[in-house]
Amino acid sequence: MSGTLLDTVERHTRLAGHNRVAMLLFTLGDQQLFGINVFKVREVLRRPPLERMHGVHELLAGSCDYRGQTIPVIDLAAALGYAPLRDVDSAHLMVTEFSRSMQGFLVSDLQRMVHCDGESLVAPSGALGFGARVNAVTRIDGALMAVIDVEHVLASIDSGPAELSAQMQRISDDTMLSPRRIMVVDDSVIARRRLVALFKQMNIECVVAQDGREALEKLLELADADADEGVKLVVSDIEMPRLDGYALTRAIRETPSLRQLKVVLHSSLSGLFNEAMVKEVNADRFVAKFQPDLLAKAVLDLLPEHEEA
Image (tube, rainbow, N blue to C red):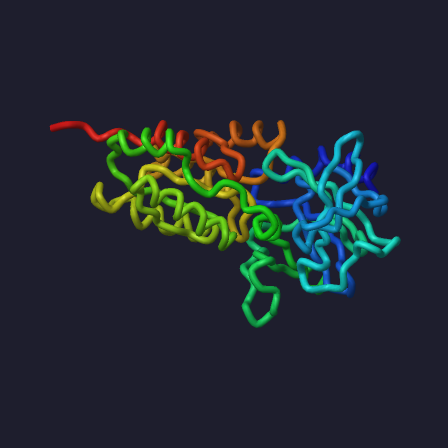
């Protein structure tokens, strides 16, 4: 499977930036299909021997050696309410890269890769019972496919730093911005909460959107607003239903009333490909999730400072 994955990545990259995404499909214990962006998957292996770790989070199945590097292994089945896979010999290990760190996820069975149109991905109804760990659903050949919010899973195990350092807090307090209002775009509930809390520390008000389509609609409404009500900067996730961050940035640059907006793409996607795409769609910055000081610095650098009368 890993050879096939690596052989076809170049073809999948041509979809990015045009509101299409290549998804790797898998199951966790029954016939329900789940998906993850292929660009986050480094390799797929049979479950290797795991070193057990005591006193760690219940979703950590252990650690393993991956090409000379020790990585944590998370039981994704257990995270989604299925029977644990840590002792199942037939389980697979998906080695993934999120926010410049590597980890493995135990899954039951690998299926195939498919191409999804961003417009077909929608936020799941609460009645489906997935909870906050699924942030989008669509239909693949008639079958329901759920896109896992891996950031939510990772944050439940290790949320990482959530606040500014004392030094960056002082810099923020001493910087006179005008206006102190930005737009935050992210389909992950936990990511939106963390971002709003971060910018509140900086005394920056947030207009919030759950995906690129909603963001674009709000930006168009705010385009003719008074200076105090408008926004001059957008902090956007990349992977989102309906309209992704690449496509949102393209739309902003192609719309005369919006093209002067500053755009910071803030995503767990990383790697040289993503850096190239950020330049191609003409975003102003890319900051990997979740690094509060780096994100704060990008916002302070890009927002205009208040001009004395």
